[in-house]
Amino acid sequence: MMGGGRATLEILQAGPHTSVQDAGRAGLARFGVPASGPMDRTAFAIAHAALGNAPGDPAIEVAAGGLTLECREGAVTVAVAGGGFHVSRDDGAGDAHRWRVTSLRAGMRLAIRPGVWGSWTYVTVAGRLAAPRWLGSAATHAPSGLGGGALSAGQRVQVEDAELRAERDGPIPCPAFARPRCAIRVVLGPQERFFSPATVNTFLSAPFALTDAYDRMGVRLRGPALRVRGPLDMPSEAIVRGSVQVSGDGAATILLADHPTTGGYPRIATVIGDDLDGLAQLRSHDIITFHPVTPEEAIEAARAGHRARERYRAGLSRA
Amino acid sequence: MTSDSPAFPRFRAVADHAVLVELGDRIDASIHDRVRHLDTALQVRPFTGFAEAVPAYASVLVEFDPLVTDHAAATRALRELVGPSAPPSPPAPPPEAAPVRDVLVCYEESLAPDLERVATRCGLTREAVVAAHLSGQYRVAMYGFAPGYAYLAGVPESIRLPRKPAPVRDVPAGTVLIAGAQCLVTTLAMPTGWWAIGRSPTRILRADSDRPFLFDVGDGVRFGRIDRRAFDAAVAAADAADPTRVR
Image (tube, chains in turn brown, purple):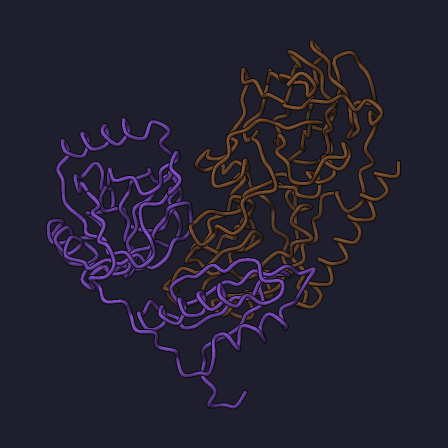
């Protein structure tokens, strides 16, 4: 314990929906448990890569309300990435408008404030963020609070094996693929049989707005009603992150990280994985449009996105 | 495909990472047998890139890694596992083989916000709805929706209703819900479009357990009626036994 330091971070202020997230608990959907994990997996991975961490360790997911924390004991280097948040240390060090790596010593405060875009940002630490685990993961399932848990003012977070990696201090570049996306690619179905061709055409041509009903479970959209034809009598089927579900009143909801694992309302389309992080960084009232792609194009987008993230990560480690 | 090829199985692409295998379009024991057959086959003989299977009443969602495989390859592998169009018919386990779990339920008006509307829609008295619900032969068909949400097949015909047109938010944990032939007891406060006909103090999801779920798929479930005083006492006892409860 002497060699590996310990740092204590106290949360002075946290907006709603602030929580601990790791890579998530995949493989348990058959028990009704979604993977959870970061709303923006790209930004989460960048915040870890900027510190040279293993991918997937626990981190703090900060929502639109921002976060202020103070290092109460020890010292630790942290990284902040995701969304257009303003990041500053109370001694005024650094450019407040950038994702960054910064080193905190006892008594220093880190403030994260919402900027012109973005809904989620990530604080990773050089060390191990201590957090309760549930079913093998510290990812917080927000509807139950199980996992690492929600964070609020007054709580203290321990960092074990805390290190200073001051040589990494400085801005983190924000790549184009981590920006918000308004043109959302979807593969139609799998329950498009519940919709007339005219309704599918409306879905693919009309603009939709994100509403205030936006949390880790999903975001409800406002737009033309998508009428479901026939009775709502389908047996419940599996839902995935990105499912676009239409309820009987014709309103569409995109299911996200803490999505229900099954549902009985038909899914008109599914957002491809490569567009989910950019979608999550939009805000209520932002406008999106849906664009159909074939399954083959969706696979190619997943692979191209992976290559772009790998190139970026390699660039970070050379820097 | 010839014109006389069967409607099922159907293989539907889901985004860039899954295939939905549809084995039927209704809640039916023989269709569910085919679901369990495919789910078991995937556990025994997973294809390259297979990630996760999510069995439901009449379908299996099969997740794969898009960096390793694609829909076409996954579908080929799944077609082989599903087998020829004749449904494999593993002998259904005899009902007495599976354990029967007891679940308490209180149907008092304040805990059963939809009981009156269910009665009206079914042309029954409230007591007749309760009696019908208690008479059902329930079996755990699948987990879904949220952690610990066990879908119980076996709601009697006389109280089967389609789900509501839109979900109602923040239905409390422990609510006993019905929709169509399905019944479940909620474990978290969640939105639902099902009909709330009672409240149970029996914990199906426990936060501090190595075995956090009360049921296994295939278990029988028997509902037992309690009054409000017994409900309150059972809630207090469950709280004391599981202080890290999920509520």
